[in-house]
Length: 128
Image 1 (cartoon, one colour):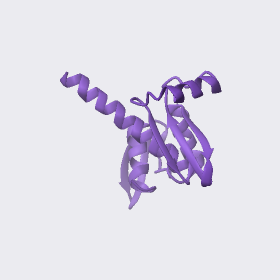
Image 2 (image 1 turned 180 degrees about the vertical axis):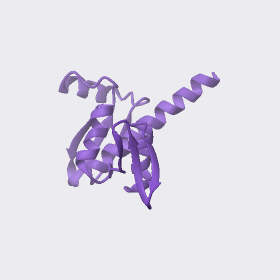
Image 3 (image 1 turned 90 degrees about the vertical axis):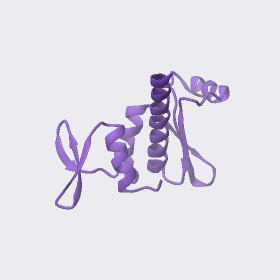
Image 4 (image 1 turned 135 degrees about the horizontal axis):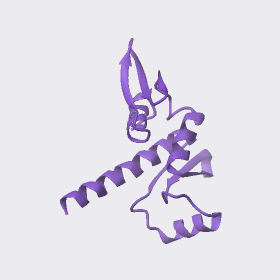
């Protein structure tokens, strides 16, 4: 999925539980505080930061101008050593991870992968 309105809409719906409607041809996010134009979560770091904050996503710059985003433990990491230990264990079943040239896009991809993983586990639990 590419950065843009489709992914922004999914972020608004699945991360923040906001309704997204079209008003006067403008995608509009319905929040508890009121309506606003749909934020560009995939392109604006300020909006993406809210996603990272909500899901405790870690963001690390890597080689080649790329950014690695990881939605790991739901409670976050206690320390850098805890983060490294988590990475070393390689148990990413419940995690969402992504790499891209854009920090905002990496955060959003990792968030959606984490949500998809959670939804898949809920479906498995329901039918188990």
